[in-house]
Length: 237
Image (cartoon, rainbow, N blue to C red):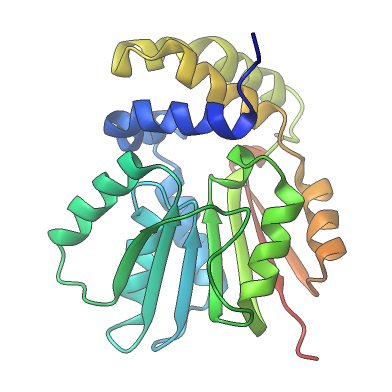
């Protein structure tokens, strides 16, 4: 029997857990993910009237925050390959007075946009789920305008001694149990642990950013390195 590819597996996970994803995300990050995103957006210094793309937008939380930040004269597109996750996002958007947001089905590995299209390109807790990190960073680099920012907020490898061990313990044992209680989807949440464990640390991801061509690259660790922001600027030629 052929094993499913990472892409197929991830797709299956999110098509299945979409209803409980938001609730679960809060538990996984000890409610910290909202604070991390807030701080990240402060560092991004989002301008009114800007255009933004949120890659692997999931249920649309960061997309919505970006739409609020760019204001009515701006435009934000959220893209995800799970129709079910997008359906939750579309429900949220429907209940908000936002006219400047569009959620579309698509693949981060091959973004359906022209070069130099956006002022900001974001990816929140999504890069770990793609089949090829480097390819997605290259695609994000391609579609952002020169001088524009590509920002990744993602789980990272904790750097504090002791904290690291605790974190992996939490991810390995506690979280899948929570997954079971919440969503009756033990295997799906076990996958989230696997993808977080294999994700590059801060230094490796920064090196990847630089290899793609971003300059400068700013890195900020959150909560003992449990999560990190990478902000890269595409140089003006």
